[in-house]
Length: 190
Image (tube, rainbow, N blue to C red; front, side, top):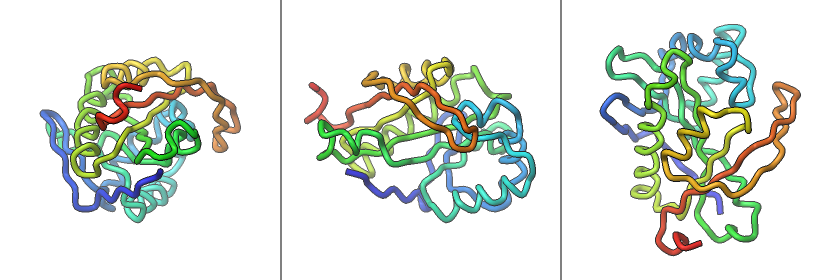
């Protein structure tokens, strides 16, 4: 079952990062990483071609209350996002009675390969387990996105299935690899 998550009063801190709600003044940092070709495309959306696109999406993050800005503590820049979405597992009879959320993330290309997204995802796993007492988190990546695959595996998610995903913005169908991470002891043995 889908669970509403409101991050507006939440701040999560790791060694290198601050995960916090978005604010309007983040727009330049957001545009800086979201306008780079190849960043959004790995998540199924087109890179931003104008700051107006970034402003519009930033507003949806603020009003949606379910996407963290990922701020790099060393330079105080927003370098990515990590959000909560409706999970594919909500439509699977095997998981229909579980409290679930899917997480998705994007990171600035400048910061790829430094372990920062793994750090952020691990912190969010604890947040979801402690604050929202979710039974499980799900996550996915397109089959060719090996960077995301490594983050997902390092964070302990287990592969469940492969599916097709149509990315409307890109007008392209991708093979999506879907994973689950049990957070409650009642489903850890499945």
